[in-house]
Length: 209
Image (cartoon, rainbow, N blue to C red; front, side):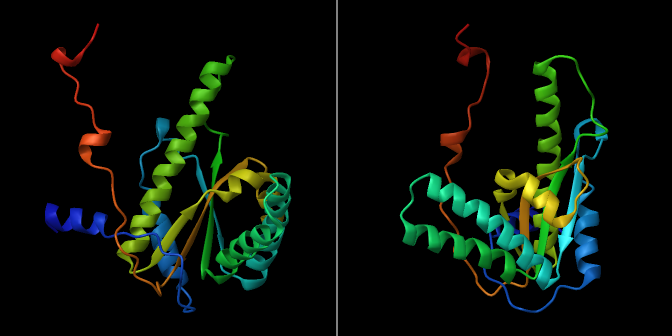
């Protein structure tokens, strides 16, 4: 693979929200997760944890529990009832329709501990950044397998609910959810901000002090 091939591969990954009903073989799922674990992590502590759900009844249970919490939040925000219903139904369907649902959690057990708030916060951010690295690598590994995938952060709002429904260890703090499957759509490329908008080059002349 040339560098051009790699850049093309990276740039052709898309967020896929519609999937075929074909099941994803366990061997493919395990290969994707194994590749995800080769991501860099703070102190090499590898604080990522993955919960894999492929059973329809479990997906339904998770979707229903999360939908209840989501509906409560929307109603508390005074969202119109018809909009609440639409959002809740869509949220449920995204979980139940995906052949594979993976919950990415952070486990702080092996991370460093500090007596002060500043460093505790930094260490937690380091762990979540590490897990995010693994999540991105998982998306790319899925892309390499010909699968579509999408990343959502809804578990952050209902961490305890997700823990309870899936019977996760209490040290596993849900951060994100990934849907995987064989794609039934080909989304167009969304506009990206230009390099000029997002990059600042620093040299002696640009420093103001």
